[in-house]
Image (cartoon, rainbow, N blue to C red; front, side, top):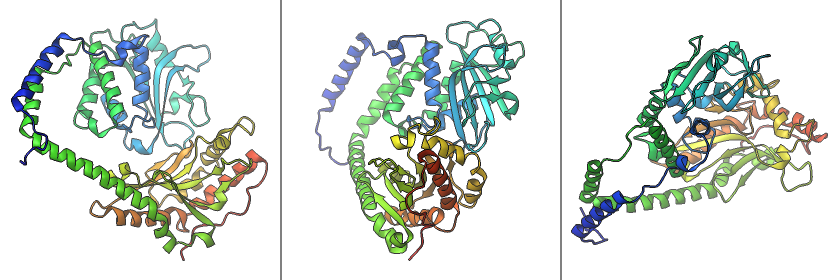
Length: 460
């Protein structure tokens, strides 16, 4: 090992750590967030599961936790990343003459279908006992008030797969379900399942989310009286390993700092040069298409000029565009993500201007109804990774692998491939989605878009 540039007296540092640990034993350890917040734990856990199990939330776990959760319930769903997932809490029975609200329902299936394919029904218990005939009522319910792409109910008989789970403390009584439909799962089972999946990969996820999820797991352990304290011997062993390799650790930290800078440099280079690379091959001006490069590498756009309209004479325009994002995160993952995007937040997109519906409402409704089959057919040979036509934001996503030996050139090459796959006459996607764009525009704004759709992007 090389000399440590930060010189220190090892004995003095070890004495400090010893005194620090002695002090730590005498002070109160900080409480987790679940101990601070008011309200019943059952409700806190309900909200936490709804958040962490939803792949679309901003926690950064994707579908990893949902996959592990379903495995724990013995529900084996493959390709969750290509399915549409909806999770709702306090879901009411829709049957006439019946009443009751179950804690959580998770539904999944294809975005183009008018009904989910599978569902998991969850009743959560921490301290409270089951109500009279509660689980029996839930198990025999035929319909539930659950939103799925414009429909406000789901029918149990139309589901291919169902699972009813009663989540409780390990020592609590099983459900009183007279039908035998509900299966018992303990909070301890969930803890073990989550920890088995995440213990080696937690630090691959955002720090804030890791802290929040760790608080959740810690609270579940307290609910089940599970021992989760750190053993001193284990801690000392890890610190001893640190001292043994401290010089190497410092070198790695310095190298990582340089790598961070390198990724930033590559991201900036790609952001500043991708337009030049593409315009050498594709005739944007004659084709009626344009590129847009923002300072933030996340927002790099390619679109027909016709898809950038200003119906209300505002600076915020109606847009539909293809996007790629040479961010450091994507570069680290060696991914070029190319997506067709319908902006979900712009007021001109979300204002309810036509019979209580917005531009985005009508657009996604058309994508999942009269144009659903033709859109699917247009993408049949493209092998997309995600198809979410029923909600604004990324409608279509395809990820292209980058060569770690040559990130810059492989990024340019894969961007060329993506443009060829989505923007040229190799697919009818742009023409079909343009029909949806035009019809939606006319319905919402009572006029036609300015200009004409130029067709696909052509090469020089």
